[in-house]
Length: 520
Image 1 (cartoon, one colour):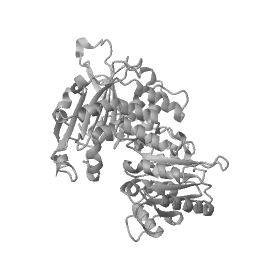
Image 2: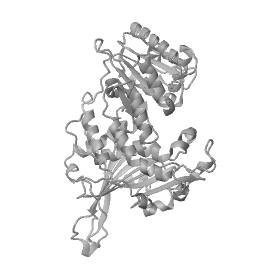
Image 3: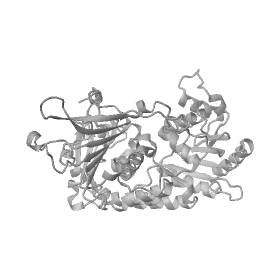
Image 4: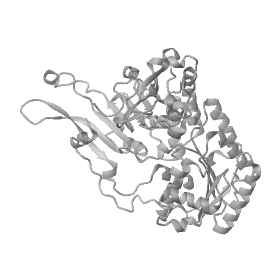
């Protein structure tokens, strides 16, 4: 059944009208200089600068703000401004509305991770901006760089005095870093030691943009602000939870990185573990950063270790072969540029996870993510148990579908709940219907994109949506034994090829209760 057909059969749920001022986002009050390392790279071009410009245009950035691009290239302020302008307005002769006000506050400074002198010059330059724009020494260092240079930049910032907060001035300095946070448990600890040689924990913002998606943030609201869900969110009422993050795209320009990391390190250590924690955590005593993250780490501590002797009963790995996507022939992973022709890197993984605590004992969580799948779809399906005794079994039999709650995260931001109703007429006949809520229709006003939200939280100093090191290490500790097993010489025996445009390897049918993707 198509999405359109399902929606047509779904009773709609409307959002009640809101006072426009009730949820208004206020402008960041503290002045600041935002320094983006990797300023000429793809992430800055596609995500960071469009997000910064959107925040500026919506009056959410501080009134006294400067943006400094930093990378190895030697370019002028004007050339950098033009580069950034084209990231928000590709037409060469057009200037986006509001650009002139921000343009005069955009600068560029060449920096090399191996050259301490370049960091000392950066220090001097930032002090000049502080004097000119009254930014008071408040600085956000955002690293849009390969993980291989993160520790070098952190150490150089420390050695040049750029990481230091002055209690007398009352300024703040923050260091925002993108995943991956290491390659395994030991490398994650090494990275942490390097970061803490220059920064205190409260200064470090380990970024996972998935957490800033509106529908991901809503998981906690749905669970803990609704009395119809909170009492039944446990092993007594829930049969299983399925978390799927499916992508249609291949590795694209990330082959060099991806062939080294694979899907387990790229998606499961961060995005999938965060979604799992939000689904499974206990309610924090307060909605504060450390209280929320405390409860997440409790979930990670309760993850049942995989029995490596029976790994195939809990894990399916795959790698995409040539196939068809939207009527177009696409190449297999091993035919992608910069990928070895005999690569054993998995591009698909599906695993069955158990959480050994009071709330979730015995409930399987199915986590699936992969590239070159049938469609782009990230969602969470909560499968409730069947009614304990059916009074209708004599008429309708035992096969009455149980209730299911689906949280659509992307591209469709939605919530729908399935339940049974009587079909009108003289016969006793049930029909499943879906109560459906669409975020875009329910809240037509402007919303913050994920990167806008994380940038705003960095400036506000709110770490709720960011990783804490203990959570990072616990997730690596859970995955590292699996990674060791998968990296052994026999890995090829465990790697299933699947056709691009499918829903993954055939072997996944033996693991999952239903295939990922749309309801069938």
